[in-house]
Each structure stands twice: as C-alpha cells, then as structure tokens.
Length: 362
Image (cartoon, rainbow, N blue to C red):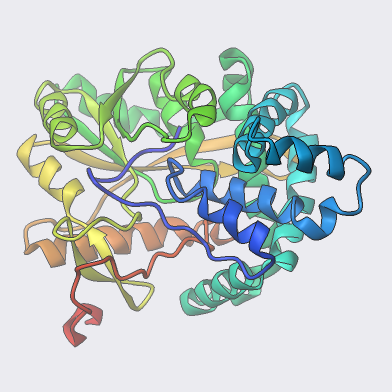
C-alpha cells in the first residue's frame, strides 16, 4: 500500500490532450485516492477514446446501453479495472512487468501532456538519460499493483527481500516510535506490506470516492498489522498517539499538501511545496525518522526493500526541515532514478498558496 501524506493533501491529475470523450473520463478521476489511481484512469481513458471505440464491433450496443443511463462510461471503466486487476494478479510477476513496460510506452506516446511532464521532470533532476527506462518502469509500477493489491499475501511476500531490518528493530526494542518516509520510488506499495510482516504499522488513508475502487484499494490497505488513520485532524492525532506509544507510522513526503500544510523547499533545484507534517510528528512523538524504498528487480525477480538512516537535521525552521527531508528523498531517488514517479506534478502551486520566494531555492 502507499504511505499517505499529511491530512488534507490533494492528488494531481495529469491533463490529457485528446478527444472530449477522453477528457471527460480523465476528469472523472479527479477524486481518485492517489496519483497511481489517476495514472490508471489515464491509461483506461487513452484506450477507450471514441476513435478506438468506433473501430470495434461492440461500440454501438455499448453506446446505446450507456445512453439509456444503465451504466455510465466512467463507472464501466472503473468496474473493468477492478475485474482486470483481479485477473492480472494470477499471472507471474515477470509477465506483468513485461506487459507493464509496453503499457508505459503506450501511455507515453499517446499523451503529449504526460510525455512533456515526465521529460521535463527528468531533465530538471539531471536524469534525462534515464528516459527510456523511466517510461518502462512507470508502466511496471501500474501493472504490478494487480500483483501487490490482489495477490495472496504469502505469494506477494515471497517476492520481496529486506535489507537492514536490524536498524528498525533496534529502534523498536528501545521503545521509540518511527516515522517511515518513502518517496514515490520503486514499488512503494510493497514497503508497508513488508513492514507489517514484522510489526504493526499505521498509515494515513483517504477513502476513494469512486465506490468501484474501494474493493481494490481498501482490500490491499487493510491487511494484517496495517492500521488506517483518516486523512483529517483526527487521523493526525491517531498518528501522534501511535508514535508516543512507541509504534511506527508511514508517510509519503513528496506529495503536494494543501494551503497551510506545507512550505516551499528546493527539490532537485526547483521550489516544491513540501509538507511539514513528517518533522512535526517526529518531534511531537519523539520518534526516529527512517527512510525506506522497494527497488524493483529486473525481469520480474521481485523487490528489495531497503531501510536507510535519515541523516538530515530537523532542528531548524519548518522550511529548513522540509529542505532536509527533500534532500534525503533526492538521495534515495539517486539509487534507482528510473523507478521514480516522474510524471507526478511535484511542482504544482496549490490553490491559495503564494508563489515561492527566491530564497526557497537557496
């Protein structure tokens, strides 16, 4: 499952330049539970454009069925995605990753706006040479969700190995809480599942407003030892209480928060509105911060979940704390840059937030 950010964070929808029918379905995904769900809807909308549907024999009856109001197109897409993911979950991981590579290129070539954002973010971070690998890895990240979310837990666990767990165990044995931070890197859905095999973990969670996604997302995110905190002030209190009790929580620190919940801080040399919640929770709960990511191995050979110490300084201002955490995220991304979610609109200016000042890039 994915670690959630601070309460009230919004997900970013990648715009699409295509038919109006495709645009309507993309807009219907604006309330999806996370950026990956948005990517999934994007892929479905690219596949189900009016131009493609006109070429298949079942288009006319489906169009008439939808017009009668029995099933709207967006609902049909969501239901098909749920069924598709459950079917795909039985296939070998190597096959899913091969399929994902092809889908990654299909989305990249079919969506100019997606392509521009991915290319621009790669170039800004200095990883332009990783473009081909990054396109394929983005597709793998989507298709492997079928395996991670819908596969049997024991089967999923067999495909992952863990490095440096002793670092985590020392903190737990000392009775201190842990704030696990992971960027959108590799198979970040795998990290929480692996942690939960060893200890209870609480994560912040926003229920999907699309009912058809709930069986997929909530089934994956409510497994043994995984506890969900609502994405609001009550959830923040739950996280703080968990840390004070010596238990770990998990967050994604590279999601864009809402107004008042972040500060501008450099991320690969450009100001990015960055949440302040991780540092606040760590200080409030007197907890340790540890970094974690799940590197995707080639040819479907599974994943390596790696725990890394956080060596940043959180003694300064909120902006300095956010910059320190962003530098730690950059260092993790440098370990396997092609596996970062480069299509995410990390540099969005949230509504109501003033533009960054020059010192934000210092």
